[in-house]
Image (cartoon, rainbow, N blue to C red; front, side):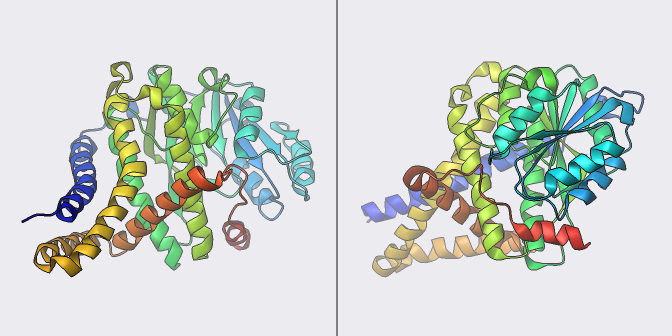
Length: 386
């Protein structure tokens, strides 16, 4: 006879299975759909572009970043590069020296630590061109990145385009784990884009129509991810293009990697809370009716129910082993099957769920501010020595 603990175990573990299973099947259908003709390349389409880059103590890498920008395959007369700096090292001096050689480079200087989002807001409001591209000091764009971003704006319904990260230190253990994580994320973003809009934006290579973002003057999460929901709220789509490539280094230490994932998770949660009014609203299409509720379930509900489910199952093992054993076997089979596709997936998923729980704790109990947390220094050192 089933007791309360049996029912709770089935409910708590059934929720993650339902959320991941149902959303996964839906996304797979869209991921396998054909690419639209409007995605074809057209090098004659060259709108004016402003690249906004926030910097804080980037003296070891900023010169290489500027060299990377100068190599982009895009007319320099249609480019402006805006660095928004709040450093207390030699970063602004290096930028100023480079700006004298390259007149399309501008510097906005703050004397106090602003954080990522306020810096991005200041840069976007100062931008003069019709398309704004978000970039990051510690990552490097492919030569064709700008062209691959802006070509989508021939479609008047597209408001934002984001790109794909390629991990440079993929031979490192953390690099392999980050690559596994990004493969899952890229599948989600591609399918969500073909369904309606994507939820997750990468600020290292993202383009947006300037007119849509100028009035985003307050941000309780990261500016780049908030942009996707802000743009969709105005009736435009935010999409992912795997041909938009940029290169970056995963952290070298597990501590830095864990911190990075926790920051991501916390900002996603804060962003969902800000835009909760879009949930289940038909005017936002499948993004409002399906993507946002499912993302909230995966990021907030699933970590809690999964933890409670495993706790209940562990206790139940001592009281009703015959009932608990098949569930343990099923969970083990799921892990083994996922590892067939990529042996890093089980560990990556575990790390991700842990990061979500940690982020929830920081938001609810410690009230941690995630916008000004220091970057993983190892990602800059790696880039500098390559």
